[in-house]
Every structure is written in structure tokens, then in C-alpha cells.
Image 1 (cartoon, rainbow, N blue to C red):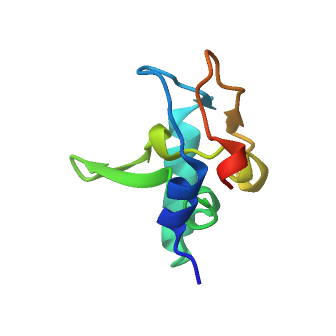
Image 2 (cartoon, helix red, strand yellow):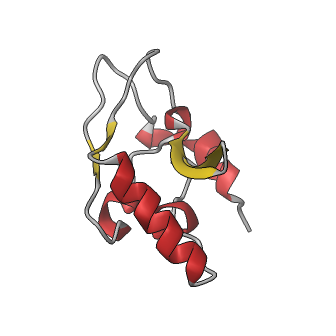
Length: 104
């Protein structure tokens, strides 16, 4: 059985520094989503369903914020699909960045 980190390894992802290929339209929308799912005792879908552990909750001054480790992204677009607020968009990478799909 493979772990989530294995997907990143086998994908052989390589991104240029500063490549922000996942757009978050509104940080406030993500905060509201995190708060809603916390109240239900669940993890937000973009975090729980992410294949490569890209999404996380960062805590800053008792505020729970959506954070991303974009270098792990394998371009599966799961986060975009499962976001209940349609607040995320995965854009194509540029300059040869991204996963090596032949490795998957």
C-alpha cells in the first residue's frame, strides 16, 4: 500500500521557484470553510482528499488559515473538484515545471 508521500516521489515533481499554479480566490472563504468543517469535527475536503499533501491548515495568532505546499502538487486537480466553495483553481504549470507523468 502506498502512502500519500509516495505519490509525490513517483511523480518526480519539479517546480520553478515562485510557481503559484494553484489560485485561491479568497482567503476569507477558506477561513470560513475551515471553521465550518472544524465545527462539524471534520477536515476540509481540500486537505483530506489531497493526493499529495499540498493543502494544510496553518495557525497564526489563533487564526486557522489555508496553507499550501505547492512543490508537492502532482496536478491531479482534486482540490479544485472537492472545494465546496469553488474557491481553488489549478492552472497549468509553465516552463517545464510540474510532475513527470511518465513516473506515475
